[in-house]
Length: 79
Image 1: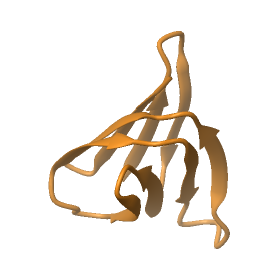
Image 2 (image 1 turned 90 degrees about the horizontal axis):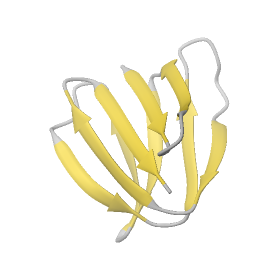
Image 3 (image 1 turned 120 degrees about the vertical axis):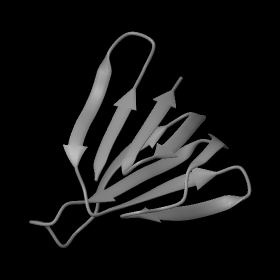
């Protein structure tokens, strides 16, 4: 599955991932392969992702934004 993290200025991250954790307004949630379509707002916190090759999560701090999950593509738009 593909993770895209975008800011108004540029693309911050484009990676093939096996799992993503996002800071939702109602709590953290995880997205795995074949997740149902979803659009949600995000709060400040950590976007965490893991690749097939790595067992540890990588982390990026965000100040909020929103995320769309559709057809194994997770697009995160951040402020």
